[in-house]
Length: 379
Image (cartoon, rainbow, N blue to C red; front, side, top):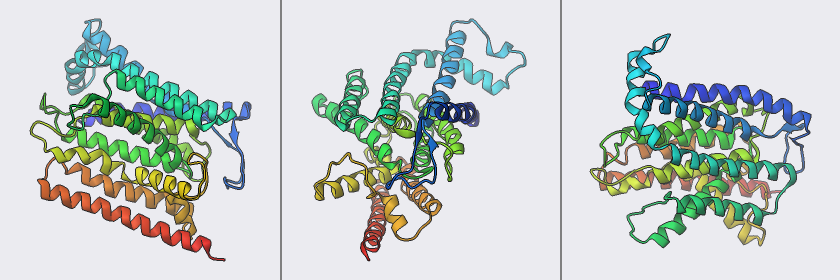
């Protein structure tokens, strides 16, 4: 497994990190920057387009891996005859899984086509500003195409219309969750990296019920996402030198949604309560989105109009520094996600304890938010 982790994370991280420098240079050349406003309090113009660096960090390793798998599967090359020779375990892994990867290439590149559309949508929105209805309709169309091609939640329900609608809402919801979370240096990317790491770990620990093998294909895609996000975060770590923009946040939310749909968390020998693993791992971004929407609806405002009502802003209202806020949300995400690693191993009582733990973390978040809100309202 260690070779899968290294081979997935290292190249994507390096590509995204190097691409980040090129994106920063080009963004400044074309004045594609985010300038300070009353709502955006960074001190100077910051290059946008970090989503392109993340996209390259994902697409280029996938393209190289696809070509390699195709060549090995069609006997064009032999891994054990390469010069310099690969470690035996790596050559065996490539030879063993090449046919399986080739069988998944159509699905893989359909996934990336949808992600590319959303990344480009975000770039256009960052550059020109799009009406929220245009953004939402485009996201829903991409989600619908994916669901129509078999990417849908099972939910243990044999009612296709219901599972299709829920799947579209899940994809669109996570796309917007990570977009809303992108309100502080390093926040959305870091939470996505933690979530992808947790999901990949679950899939490597919990075997597919039909094959009784680790879910390597989806775990590998998540690990590539981890690497690309890490490479980008080297530019986005406070104080940020580049922002991912809507293009990056849309792409991250979409890929996490698709991977959770493709993965098998329950069934066979795995208990049905293991299906809650994605909700545990993604509890913080989902909570942040729902709480912000409730606040905006209560105040009679457009739910898609940006403001300063997020969890991160509440913590800033308590007097935390931006770095402290970011690390606090990272820790909360990791805390809720760790329980997901055990869901497939515990009985119903153990699952109840884990879900209660996640609920307690969210209640703690709500208390902190309320305290921050009261402090911000004081003269």
